[in-house]
Length: 174
Image 1 (cartoon, helix red, strand yellow):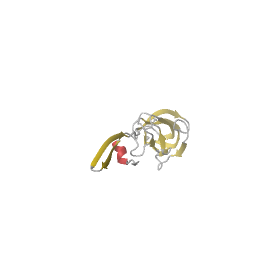
Image 2 (cartoon, rainbow, N blue to C red):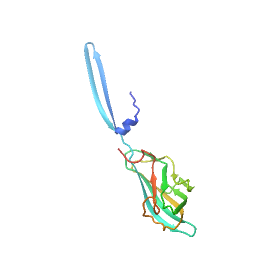
Image 3 (tube, helix red, strand yellow):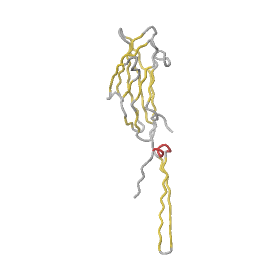
Image 4 (cartoon, rainbow, N blue to C red):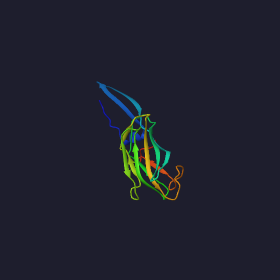
């Protein structure tokens, strides 16, 4: 029996090549035989998306909701997280509180207070995701509006722009 521990380079390459050789002799007769095999490694392929939801206006603050989705279209269990959420609102809109639930409406849930020095927050922790699975998080951000009307369709630094990110190297594929 021979064992081999996969290396990070094997996972990046996506395959492992193995050659076995047996040699034997019987008197002056030497015999040898070899066989090779390549094994394709299944690996995760993670994708992170965020879509704007609803905008609710109240007397003391407004609330915007987002849906954050992590999917694994690869052939193996993957791990992601924590997800970094960074509101990039118009400067006249002041994010005050963020709340989230998930994946899929379950725990973990959480909330955080946002300020001039706390401008992003982490959703969840390192989370396994099965091949072919999708995890959905609901995120709500409360904010106070200045002189600019809130808009869910603006780019970074304007309206209610908001972005999410996985830790470096977790998203995408080969």
